[in-house]
Amino acid sequence: MTKYFGTDGVRGRVDEKLTVEMAYRIGRFIGQYPDGKRNRIVISRDTRISGKKLLDALIEGIRLSGGHVYDEGVSTTPSISYIVESKGFDYGIMISASHNPFYDNGIKIFDAKGKKLSSDIEELIEVYMDSPTDFLPQYSGHNLGKLIEGSNLREEYISFLVSKAKFDFSNLRILVDCANGSASNVAPIVFKRLGINAEFVNDKPNGLNINEHCGSTHIESLIEKSKQGKYDLCFAFDGDADRLLVVKDGEVIDGDTMIYMTAISKLDRERLDNNAVVITVMSNLGLKLALERHNIQYIEVDVGDKYVQAKLEELDLSLGGEQSGHIIFFHDLNTGDGILTAIKMMTLYVGNGYSFDELKKDLLIFPQVLLNVKVNDKKAVLSDAGLLALVDREKKALGKEGRLLVRPSGTEPLVRVMTEARTLEICNGVCHRIKDYIEKLAR
Image 1 (cartoon, rainbow, N blue to C red):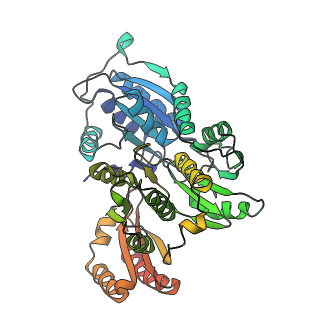
Image 2 (image 1 turned 30 degrees about the horizontal axis):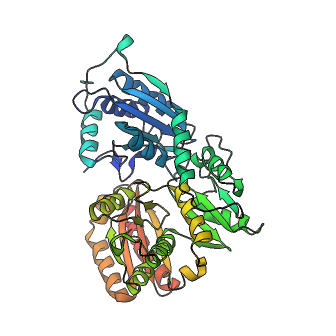
Image 3 (image 1 turned 60 degrees about the vertical axis):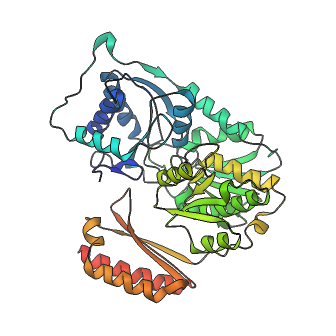
């Protein structure tokens, strides 16, 4: 089990959970692993004020290890995945804490195939990070690794996104919330090249306002703005633009619904690979029942797009994702990409032959309540005998008419309590009983 790495890299409050020294050590390791190879590494970051100092520390570490750094500048997490794989880099690094507030940051690492780093390599990095001595060889002088300006790589990623639009979107009126994050530097260019009549909000990052009352984690902001104009679709990205939520006619279309609509559309055209999709344990029970009614198989994995990606690759499937809006169109890109997902949703909207309402008419989403409970020791809380007994009783009471999931966050000091049932009242009752018990434990 890793000490610093969670389900999506290293993440936490800057100068506390994530320090400049940690970034430097990660750079030192990645710059030469394996076997002292002088690696080529592309790096990007989101708009957080702390991004530059973490970038500088990573670059210093990589260059001292002999690695060559290509600095893409401010861009999206999926841009790194695309660039690494398509341009033959050894690694890619994204400096971002995704949907977290500005005072957090993170480091996500991608391997040469554009996939999130394996836990085996993460464990090796942690051994080096905790070592009292810096035992790796260092280069100096003219032997230092090179630092290369790489904004042209972002341009290639933008061209890739534009190439995925197969229909004319010029008649669409779109509202886009960039979360004052990475999308601010990419989405306006993509939408302009596609000739879309798009209006952008929260696209003026200042280092402190990323995800602040905006973006996919504060979708209520977009819902309110959507009422002020006649928009066909409204899109909300998170801080690093690897996820997307959609608002249409004041209604939120989440990842579960996007997966369902896409699957039904592909099924109609006999293009759903192996007639199956990958979802997670957090996916709504209503999605599973609707997929079953259409004889579409679903494979359930743990939360984290790296697990979705791994299962898609293992089973040779084309579609998977999370309720939060991480959707992977595996034949296009092997990671979640919010802007690519927006293009796919516009494609469904104009080129499918069915309205969104028709596509999702058989999907009945169960009421769901998700509570996050802050704790100091997730492992101790989740192994408490009293909590386990309470969870077991609540699950038995729900039976087949609902679902209860109590799990640790992979990126924050939280225990997540999620309940689905036929009514919101039942959901709230179950969730709050579990939450109250956990809070008593934490006192």
